[in-house]
Length: 121
Image (cartoon, rainbow, N blue to C red; front, side, top):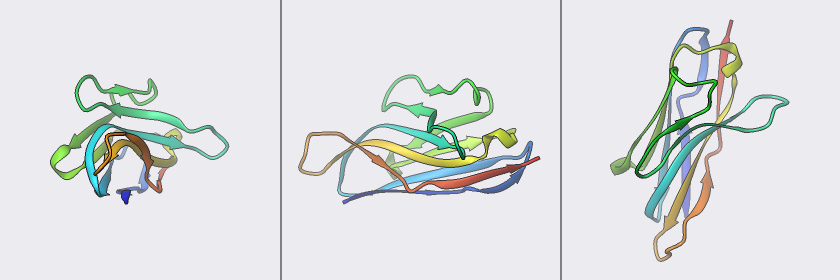
């Protein structure tokens, strides 16, 4: 069984910073790409940041220059450093990863449960 568990959300004032973490655990053979998504009330879920196993990280235009995605492969963990937060960043943030469990060669998509980020003005 593979699980993704996020942490680090909370309430912060505009201009502040938060760091989200998402740790994958269980019977993991390999992790390919990892990503952060967010969904604000009444809006569709959107991709915030993406990090492949190798190659270029990508960001939503709305967070470029403020957010940084990184990963620690030894810990099966992906991070999202969020700086200069704005009220419009308020949302539930969820991590996603393409993981191949042990005894399989197939990658499938796994999701965390989500963590609330609230930015006050």
